[in-house]
Length: 393
Image (cartoon, rainbow, N blue to C red; front, side, top):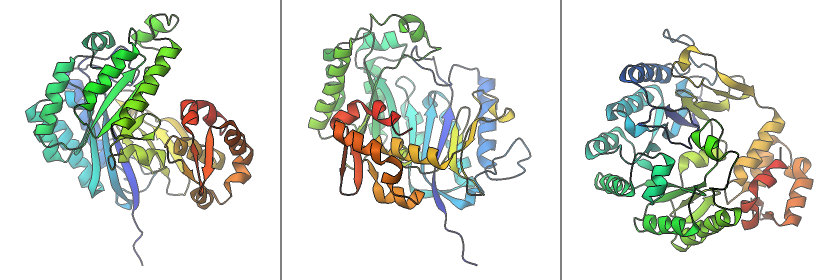
């Protein structure tokens, strides 16, 4: 009998530990003691090693998506929290657990989030030996006053020190996270940050506008009173400056909030936007893919340190209509848009049969372009993307 071809998949691992939680953050993360961290990593490695087994012996196993040997892992993303805040050996151990359980493509992109103030030469050497080949460093701003207001633990100078240490350690693929629309921030502040960061020539930049999330200190401060936040005009000026400055410096905008030098697009996120299956390990981590019976399934681990002893959250089998809507919304986040041929192959029907009037409407409004078998957002469409996406739900 011919062996079944392995399917591509991605892995996300959530490390919920931080030195201190930032004032704007609503992710499952925080500062915990040594014992809780040790227990969490025991659960995390056990969860990885039990993937696809029906009887793990030490807690519930995930047999929904089939055995690990049915997949080849094309990317791994270690996020948080602040993965760089824990002992680097923890990162090496969990990557070893993944390799012992799954077939990992030798050319896989292995990304890890890190915050300035938590990196050093010794840690970086361990990450490099363990196979991490892409770092994502959360700077947010080059203004020390803004960093303090955000609750960050570092200064811009500490970021520079950590960035240079990463380069010295041999990391040739580095992303820097930036935020705009911050309380008290001006367009000149943000443009100054962009210029300072560009002088370092990172391979990738993720640029987001601040969102005031519920259950955060920022929500208590600004949820009902936005007077300290930049005006809508100021926020749009920062948004326009980001596009203009980065594109003039050779960075391609390949997704709504992401820019990269040619060839350095984040493969993990690109896989997510194009429907590659992914498996999440750790608290609050989600998994998505085809089950052993052919159903497209999504589920999320509980948002608790003892997540392996709690029921899954947001468990759902996606209907054909939901699958099509996700294909459109996620695919249109990318500036290259979606392929009409791929839509037909994946869903067995032409795209006009399902979305003809919606597409026609947005082409007429100037928010979509349809050409050469692809549909994508215009520059204006990227600016108002959420309004476009609503029509595909």
